[in-house]
Every structure is written in C-alpha cells, then in structure tokens.
Image (cartoon, rainbow, N blue to C red; front, side, top):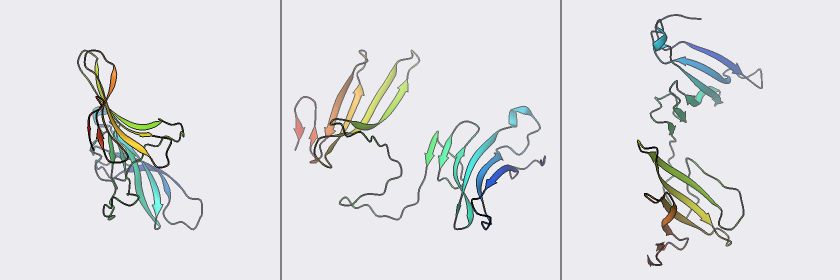
Length: 178
C-alpha cells in the first residue's frame, strides 16, 4: 500500500494464460483523488485491462459514480455509458457498415424487434418515453426502422413514423413519402 497523495497508485490483480506473456490482463483499482486523507475523497475506479500487442490496454472502466467507459483508453469517462472507437472505415451505404454498438434480438419471429428506449421522468414520476426499433418481417434482410412514443396524458404507446426497408417514410395515418 502506498499512501502518497498522487492519483498514480493502483492495486491490481493480473492474470496470464501463458508464463511467456510480459504484460498481463487483469483488474486494477485506481485512485480518482490524490488526497485520500478524508473519507469524502476516497473515490476509486475499477478497470479491466487486456493484452494487445504484448502491452496492457484499458478495455473497460467503472468510475466511483457508476459511469462506464468502453474503449476510452484511460481517458476521462464523460457519460453514464461512454463508448469510443477510432475507425478509419469510410461510410459506404452499400456495404456492411462498421458498428460501435449493437442491440441484437436473435428471435426469428416475424415482427420481433431490437430497440432503444429514450426516457425522461418529470417531478410527478411520469415518464416521457420515445423508442427507436428495427422491426423484422418474414422476408430475408427486410426490416423497418420504427419511431414510436408514449402519448401524453394517456400513457399509451403509438408509432410516430417508420422508414421502410424500401426507403419510404410512412406515417400511421396511412400517408407517407414514397
């Protein structure tokens, strides 16, 4: 244990599947504040490190406030979930695009979906909720991008619009842009 007032001190558990590895994967506990002499300043982060090209790299970090970082490389985690990637792949709409995060529903049921919920709560405890979903069909590679919402006052849910697999914008009232 090192009680110096710096943020460079860590406690760690390193593991290796092979004794020839010079840098190991493992868990580290890192001080967030240099001076831990008072209990209010005793904040630490937990990191998961992997071995890449025989060097240890930080793969995942959980801060004392519960913020999580994937691929932040030891940089400050700035959001509740902070996912970073440096990809030089140029956007090409006719290819399988690079993806930073994936929400994957493995069900083959027609109409099944994978989605993202965006939610806010007001001071009365009511939630404003919006959704973005990929909804599959029975046709290979066919799915629609569906935007839906929670309707104010009733709390029920309804589709706001969808972009069909053909690229058409459709609204629930039957009108759309083809």
